Length: 139
Image 1 (cartoon, rainbow, N blue to C red):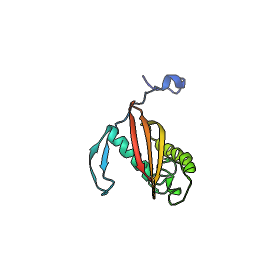
Image 2: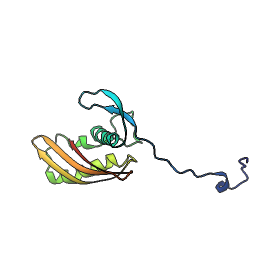
Image 3: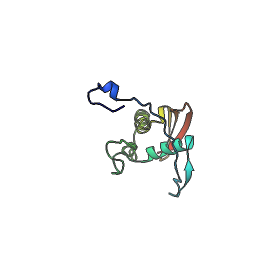
Image 4: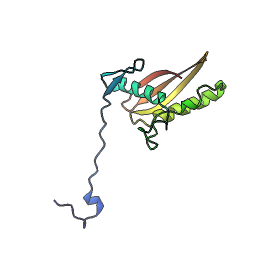
C-alpha cells in the first residue's frame, strides 16, 4: 500500500513503541584514567552516576547546552557553606544531574556528612528496570 498524501495523518503514520536500549559501555577506571572492558546493567548505571556527578555542567562543548549533562556541584566546592545549605542544595544538584538519564527514575534519601575538607553524600537511585542502587560519592 502506498503512502498517499490524501489520507489523513492517522492512517499514514504508524506508532512504534520505544524499546529499551542496552546500557553497554566501556569500563572507565577513574583512578588511572584507563578504558578497558565492557560493562552493562547495574555496573554501567553506577559508572554513569559517578561520571555525571564528576562532570561540570556546561563546561565541555562535547556535551552541548541542550543535553544538560553533568552537575553544577563545582560552584559549591571550596566554599565554607553551612551544612543546612548543603542539605538543601546537594540533593537538588545531584537529582538534576541524574534524572536526565532515562535509566534512572528517582534519586532520594540523601545523607550528607562533612569530614574535614571532604563532603560525603550517600543516596538511593531507583532504575527503570526496578532495582534500587545505593550510591556514595565524595565531593
